[in-house]
Image (cartoon, rainbow, N blue to C red; front, side, top):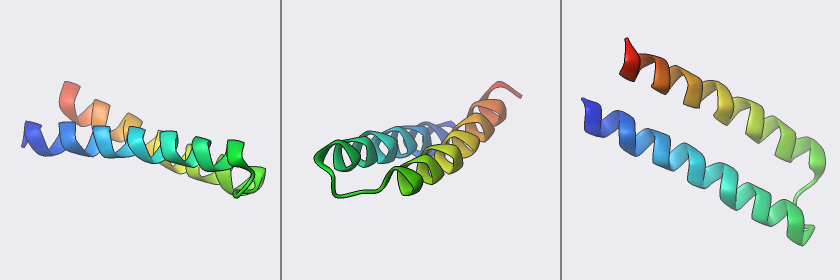
Length: 53
């Protein structure tokens, strides 16, 4: 179970990283980037909570 949670955290971080890259290139709007960051942040906090609990 821990491996799945770690892989999920890595996937969440990669999603934010690649979204930031697209935002900097100008192919993504700021509003969409903010929505992605908020959603991924909530999911990341949930996974960290599950690991620590």
